[in-house]
Length: 69
Image (cartoon, rainbow, N blue to C red; front, side):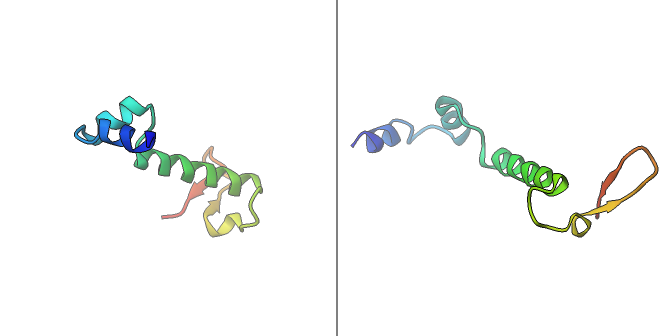
């Protein structure tokens, strides 16, 4: 029953206010964070995906990796 009571407490608050009160980030920010973690895993070889399917390797210009458009 405590979960239902907690939900009712925040029922009439805005999405942003509920996030702030609960101390969590928005879904959009969580998705971006997940995407960044996945990129890290691909680049570092933790996932068995071919890095060249996601990035174009470049030996010049100061950056080792460039995202494809």
